[in-house]
Image (tube, rainbow, N blue to C red; front, top):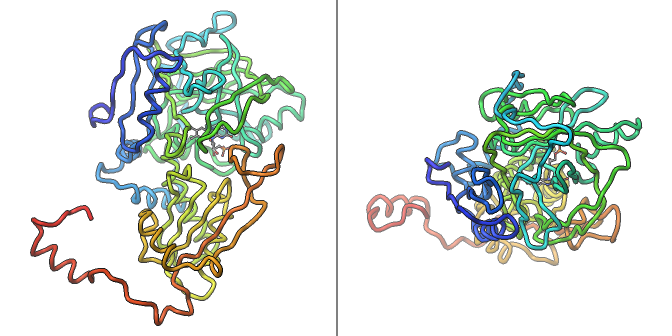
Length: 465
Ligand SMILES: Cc1cc2nc3c(=O)[nH]c(=O)nc-3n(C[C@H](O)[C@H](O)[C@H](O)COP(=O)(O)O)c2cc1C
């Protein structure tokens, strides 16, 4: 990242508020550098914190070995193709690696020596796990799952994990508890960003995230077996710990400022991790991927993935002629989806909108789906607004779906308490099928005229629009 001019080093910011305050400022605009903090007051000066990892299209492209010229819309195609034919290379087990530079057990364990920041002033504690892999094993099949579930550090050897209802981590934990057994767990922070990024993607139950991460980076991820639990941990990780979650062992957790831009969660009881082994490199780097008012680091990189995944799932559901999908960053890359289609029949646009809002990759916490014609670039919000203003009639083209899959992090979800749902709008901002033949001509130069003036007057004309 540094060689590509994508890294800014910051020395001397404290972990209480200053690191988080600096990260928050950089997160307000897409395209800022990754931030590497050292000399954190009160801590080993060589222990570092790295944040704002994915808030740049160039860094996302670098992560996946794509050319520097990659544009945000190209990433949508990258993810769509990855879902059509997932690249997989299995992990490679090795005996040792840098994560074992320091191994602490029993009373030696001291996770508080890592300068874990309070990321936002209103946070209820210190979150070591944001850019995190939480690893668990299915006790029946042996399937290994890893996901990004937030991890708060409470004490030298006590942490909590918060996996939302229905997420794989939550399902696996329950399997152990139903047998009255403790759930083995490993938490890893600081890995190749491609390995981490897969933790935040909805990889189907039974599929190994390590296989996909290996496929994306082009070589198998080297893993060691954690000493107590035997769970596979990337050998090159910066920081890792393992331990057990015991049935009914829950403590207060939170709040953490979340990806919808609100403290919607509050303080709640969540599973406690009793840490048995703590491992780290000699000079570890804690990585952070911080939620905040979107666009934020937590959700921005997942926008192109979500668009690609929704596109793939719409095609798999039989919706023809999908020409583009966009998950707008300001909607946390979930709440606003725009899909572009080349209309084939009356009702096609409504079908596209409904499927986008309900397919697996699009359904959770969505609020708005806009369907546009193929001449509209779904990633260009000006074009989308123009389509809404000129091609839709709310009385005819707006549907509201009630009681859809949501989360308490959505501040308008209902009812209060367990099992929260939301409503969402599906707007067809397409030329009405019945008026296609007499739809007015659009006031824009033809492709021929464009090509002609660009060729003849190139030195006067902007190349980028
Ligand atoms: C930075 C980051 C933080 C996340 N935090 C949480 C969290 O605290 N709890 C949660 O359930 N999901 C969280 N997610 C979303 C899950 O990681 C995502 O839904 C993933 O697919 C879960 O893995 P699974 O499909 O194996 O359950 C987070 C994602 C990212 C990228």
